[in-house]
Structure formats: C-alpha cells, structure tokens
Length: 372
Image (tube, rainbow, N blue to C red; front, top):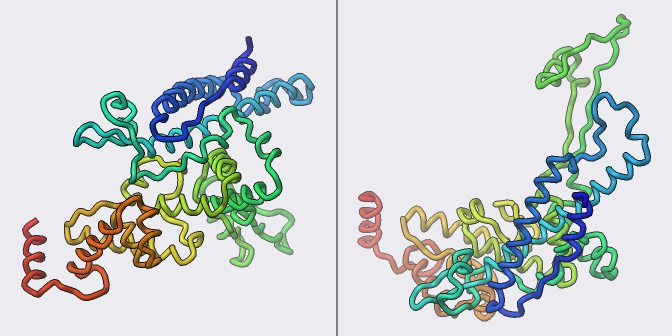
C-alpha cells in the first residue's frame, strides 16, 4: 500500500464520541492523543519524501513537470499533505480545549491540565473554573482533514461568520504583504546600467548608485496577524462558524483576561500559536478591561504581591462593565471574591477610589519592598 493510500485510509476512519460534560473528557483525550501522535509520524514521513513541495522538479530531469503522470501524482501528494495538516490543526485545538476543561479533585488537592488526565482515576472529575474552553466547538472541527468539504456545506450565514473570524485572525486581503521595488533609471549618457551583487546589501548598494527618489523602496501593509499558521486559522474559523462570531470574541476575550502574559508566552491555548499581545481593536469598550488588567498586574508586581490572574481579570472586567452577574458568570466565581479583591486593591491604592492606606502603612510597605 502506498503512503498516500495509507494516510487517506487512516483519516477516513477517524471518528470520535464528543463529551457532553467534563466527566467524559479522559476517554476523548486518550483517543485524540493517540491519533495525534500517529498523524505527526505520518507528517514527518511525508516531509521526508518531499510531499511539502511535490511539484519540485529534480535537477537533471528537464520538462518532467509537463508529464501528466508526474503532475497527477504531485497533485495527490499536495492534497494529502494539506489534509493531514488540517487534521493536525484540528487535533491540536481539540486537545487544548480538553486540557483546559478538565479538573480532578483528590481530597484537598486540585489537579488541572495534562496531569489531570494522568490522575483521572484517583479522584473526582469536574470542570476547571479557571480554564478557557468551549466544548461546543469540538463536534465542528475537521478531524479527518475535510476542511473544504465542511466549508462548502456551510450555509451562507455561517460562511459569512467563517470569513469574519478568519479575517479577525489575520487572513484578510488587506493584511497580505505588498512590496513595490523601484528600479534606478538609465542615465541618458550611458548605454549600460552598472550591475550590483544580489545579497543582503542589495538595497543599500542600489540606493548608493541611484538618486534617492529612485532608490529601492518597500511599502508594506503587512502584519503577522493573531495566528500565523493558516491551517490553525481556518480550523478555528470552521469550528466557530456554526456557533457565532460573538461566541468567538467572548472566548478570545476570556483568554486574554484569564491568562497572564507569562502563561501566554509559554503555554498553548485553544487558539494555538496566537499572539501574546491582545488585539484590542476586536473587543470594543472591553479592550479597556485588558489594559486595566495589565496595569493592575504591573502595579502588583512592583509591590511584590501575588494575586490570582483570574481574580485580577475579573476585577478589571467589572471596573469596565459594572456588571456583577456578568462578571461572576464569565469568570465562574462568586462576586464576593471579586468585591473583596477590589477592596484590597483600593486599600493598596492601585485602584481609583477611597484609599484606606495610611502614610505609616505605605512607609512599612516601602520598607518591606526594600528588604526584598
């Protein structure tokens, strides 16, 4: 059996039973992880055999790209490799949702993340209140790599939602790079143009040999976007297209409010490879809550005071929304925890309001800070 047939046969048989609650996550995670590792091994083997660039013509074999058999085989390789890329991206997203969702209680011990799956039989399985996840996305991801099939079957409204989500993640046409090189003009008294070596100093040499107005210039409208990997972007778009754009923005805001910058830099998420910096333009007035959270984190760090990231995010969200019930629901905690944290922050003088801290207390805090 050829590698193409083997990979396609494996992808065609990928099936999952999606958990309706967190108690069913261990079995789902085990199946996902097993298939994910096998998909990675397939991808490595395909890259070894040149599936990433199947149309590349071997040196010495001239005009081989014109051979119908060569072109047909190259097309099959490209389609199969793209299919496994979409499948891998979907599995990464699903694994992140499952990892964020699970929590195991073992007496007074609380276990989350991948360790929770290793200790699932030693305690009671529940949902992680501090996690950023959405189990409703799981049934809509292209686990078999059938991205184009799912996209073509979407109704018009969902296709519009898909395009909006992918555009927000950085796939819009306006985000593509645009380069405009300007060549030096031919001098009127010369028959030839002096050549310059191609390399890293090409533009600098060109600018020295030509007038400033004729120098090589680059005008760019490019920015990397939130997620660089196009397969992840499209899988996220497919997953949320049948939910809503608002739910996507809600989960994205939840991620930036519940995760500290340290966590965003070092750990994966339900949006694999997403930018550490928040896209404030997507959140409207709630962009101020992210700015406020980062401001509070900086002030607490200066005071050498540790506070739970989700509590800081909840306080920042409440200061902008002024919605007690909405804050409690979004962060899965009683509002009394938020109100107590808010009073502590006001006492320390890092939140506007009545400052209860006295000069003697401030001097004592400065003394402790100097001692550390």
